[in-house]
Amino acid sequence: PRAWEIFCPDELLSSPLWESVKKNEQIVVYDEILEAVNIGNITQFKRICTQKTLPEVLADPNATKVLEKKICVTALMDLVFNLPMDSRTISFDEVSRRCEILQAQVEPMVMHALSKDLVGGMIDQVERTIHFTHVMPRNLGLQRVKNMTTKMDTWLEKIQNMEVFGHREDG
Image 1 (spheres, rainbow, N blue to C red):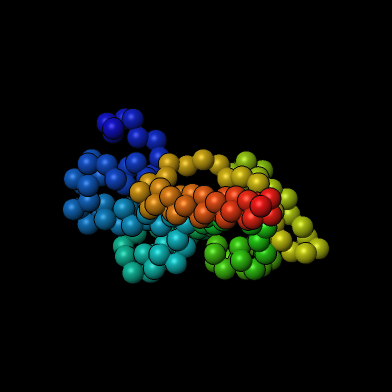
Image 2 (tube, rainbow, N blue to C red):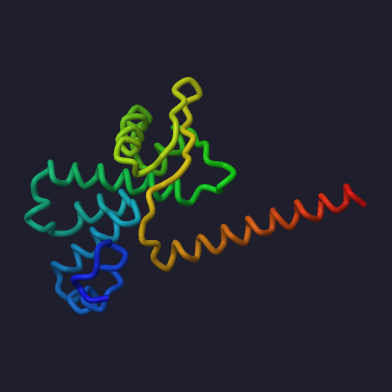
């Protein structure tokens, strides 16, 4: 796609345009930050913040905090996307670990994601779990397509096992 046709980070990060400018030191930092945001990797982002010279726009600690919150939401979306279709209820603890936030921050962050319709589901405060029903579609990128292929293979295997089990009971 041409530069003006790119609307999501996965497309941008894999475009020839981006590849051609990545040799510039400052662009390398932007590339690493975009990658961290895109995959929801808060550890990578914090490492960049401590080890690299950040662009001026991120020199303000408030800007960094806003970006960290966005990365946490992206991490949540990635977590939900990678859940098996038949097992979409997870604990606050799992969300806390994947998003690298305190347990007390899980519910407000999930509520924010629910309010923006980035994910769908219900929070069970008593059990401290969240049942997710869907996640907003995103450009998949090569690794996510590979993950989906693996999920589909597992799903088809389960269906085949159910068919074999059903035929045994009939016979």
